[in-house]
Length: 96
Image (tube, rainbow, N blue to C red; front, side, top):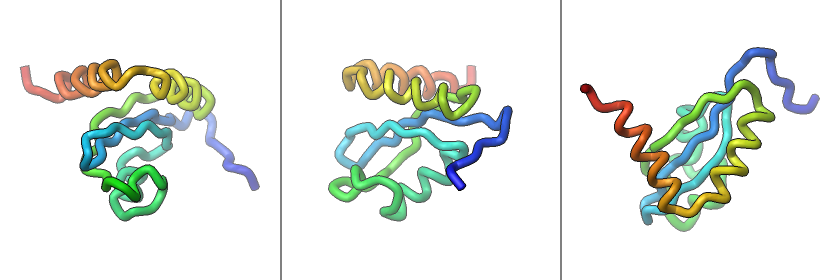
């Protein structure tokens, strides 16, 4: 059966930092589990050359379709703009 999604189940677009500083963008219904997969060397060939070191950004989406659209938009951004997303997420995590 193709990947069925439960209605109302959130999907996420996420960014993972590789050891070489580059950022990988992907989608998942469980970004923490997906990050663990990337760290174990499974999930994306991107990390063969430089291992995944940190899950640096997650953004909740309504459904898988919205997550895919958001992923396409983020992948088109320059690295500096992606770094701004990471910085905004990091700022939200800091105590005020």
